[in-house]
Image 1 (spheres, rainbow, N blue to C red):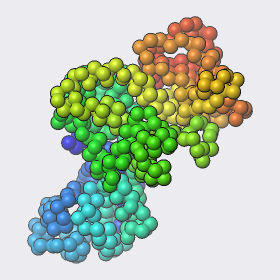
Image 2 (tube, rainbow, N blue to C red):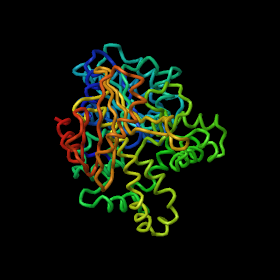
Image 3 (tube, rainbow, N blue to C red):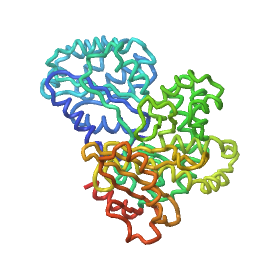
Image 4 (cartoon, helix red, strand yellow):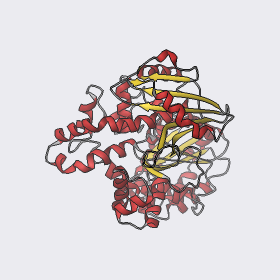
Amino acid sequence: MSQRIFVDRKEELAILRKDYAEKGKSLFVIYGRRRVGKTELIRRFTDGKGLYFLATNEGDRENIRSFQGIMAAFLRDPGIRGGLYSDWFSFFSMLSANKTFQERYRKSKLVVAFDEFPYLIEANKSIPSVFQKIYDTFPDEAGVMLILSGSSISMMENEILSYRSPLYGRRTGQLQLNPLKFRQIKDLIPLGFEDLCRTYFVLGGVPDYLLKFDQNLSFWDNVFEKILSKGAPLYEEAEFLLRTELREPRNYMLILKSIAKGNNKLGEISDYTGLDKSMVSKYMDVMMSLELISPEIPFGAPEKFKRRLYRITDPYLKFWLRYVLPNRSEIEISRSHDVLERIKEDFGTFSGEQFEQLMRELVVDGIIGRPFSKASRWWGRNRAKSPGKDMEEIDIVAYSAERDELLFAECKWSGRRTSVDIIHRLKEKSKAVIKQRPNSRISYAVFSKSGFSGNIGVTDTDTLLMDIEDLRKSLEKMKK
């Protein structure tokens, strides 16, 4: 299903329009994971400026026939339909000499968009070379903007964007389309703020996933019908995503399962999977490039920090690995209701983890009234405590280079109010980090779903307390 609602891609459209405004021919590359909204972005941009073509895996001849029909209809030149072309270069050689085509791109720049371009490459490995020749045949002053788009990130990077690609050096612009941020999805799925959070915890910002949820159903009914039921649109999507991107999905799945079970260190993952550490590192590098997982180091640690942890970046994939994959046998024999009840029991813990990640994103974007350059977790040893009890961590340490400000924050997604005593513990833990930047401005925050208990009035002026209603109001201000 294509995305029917177009939400907040202003920056991406501006980048495309800037390339379009340049005189002469141009070649623009768009790539990003499945369902992220590439097709809708291209269609929105192309509307009135040119034509959109969705490639298939049927091979050159069938794709050329389809493209002939679309081009003929767009230019209102039935003569373009004539002739049988077995290769793209022959067809475009004819098209370049066509007077209607020439008149059209001289009148105003003509966009020709090829979506799912990797399908053409899969059927014909020489396609990058062919399209390089096609592009080179257009005169430099020709008003033609060629867009190549694809969901296979690895193939787009290796076959089109890499130095060894024949198309390298031809492109005038490129754009990796990422999932929407939390603050962008409110217009896509108009829900109450808590349900919006829970939906984001499960689906992230992938537009097509979000549109699968039925606004007339409750959150848990949507989880049951759209994810936990056989034949549901998001029941097998994770496996399809991995098969699309990865050549050895079995080993990748083993690594992801290991991380989902809490094995966050390279050695733990190697032990669980039975794969050599060097092999695990190789697979992990691929998944990091696809933004399926990400490494985590404590705030302030050097980039070469060796004891890094690995986490699953994508919310939907994390939810699927945690709750769907281990329960496939029960779902297959129609015991999804039992699975749902177990998910509900554990969902508070899952939501707490996701809430921390969400608040790091929102802190950077300016949820507390000012943005930050970066935000991450911090952990380390408190040598004043006894071994086994000396590890401490802070949910969020954010830094603004512009203001030289450090923010320390804790996140609580619970049905109970959070005691304001948490501030005293936060300030004590933060001393280890403050030593690294003694001259920085320091501030503190606590984000609590259910509010606070205790004497809130005695909190210092450098401390901000925000409950879910405060977050909702602040988000509305950010959108204006």
